[in-house]
Length: 380
Ligand code: HCA
Ligand code: CU
Image 1 (cartoon, rainbow, N blue to C red):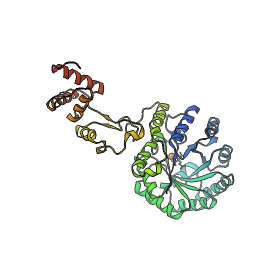
Image 2: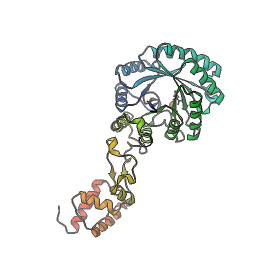
Image 3: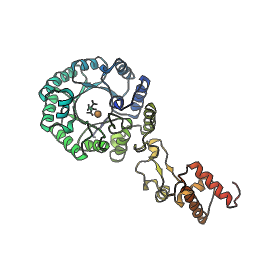
Image 4: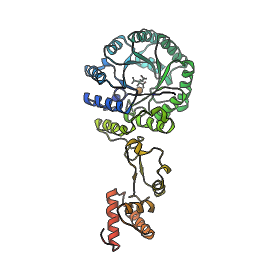
């Protein structure tokens, strides 16, 4: 059976998110939760980045997780040696190959990139570690340049090549084409994809990469990262749960919500409203047409079963779009058996009240009780 590695880069790409800072215990706790969920790799920053990061990488390795810790490392000897001096399982090397990055970032030509990378790849392989080489800004790189670099690094011994959409420019079709081309050309090598979200296609592009033959997909918790981030773990899981459940059969999906919550709190944020699965309203149904159908069978408007993620469904009764089915259901769950005419009247009254603004469930319950009493019924 085909296998898929999910690489979570919350501790590396994620800390490049504006305002992000994880102290040591937070880094460790994020890693523990990722491990409990079952991701294959946790990517950490280059140990040379700072003494604290070096210490954190050591501490993360000392957790002895099932998840493999890989360091994200520039193609520079000092950086590689510093990473090899820690017990990380592997090194994720990267080098910008686009004209933009070659001109404005490191200033090296393609032949110089190869000359820098090849001996370092050999060094990592000799040290018995996993090594991946990523062509940063792959989707703005000249195809001949890109393949020239990949041919050389594969010859030198990399086990996986990375195709990052560094600036979030690619469309799903472009991702599919480039990944497919590389999968055909390098059948013996793994392919990793890393999709930024600048134009809103990060998850779509990541799934396109999978479908074209990538075997390792990068994500972060909540999708945090440079600028507006990369594909989110929850977003990718949502797609895989529906279309490729066998690829995440061993994952503990009930831990996802606590991980997203933990990272949001660490960043002093709330979970964004549009994150799949764990957003506060991800399983809340509102309009009367929807609530009626969902109360009969949740599958009508749900493709993800909240209980598989340890979460609950909510029916939002307190809006002007509410329907009598939901209102009658709520009244019944409060112990009030209403006739169908009464449900229609109550629904009408509730809709009128909700014209002043949406109501919380508590406000709805109070409204229903008050309405019931005012109709001359005994208090329950
Ligand atoms: C970076 C850029 C990177 C690298 C991804 C990779 C990108 O922050 O250094 O190594 O595959 O988006 O290109 O995150
Ligand atoms: Cu990135």
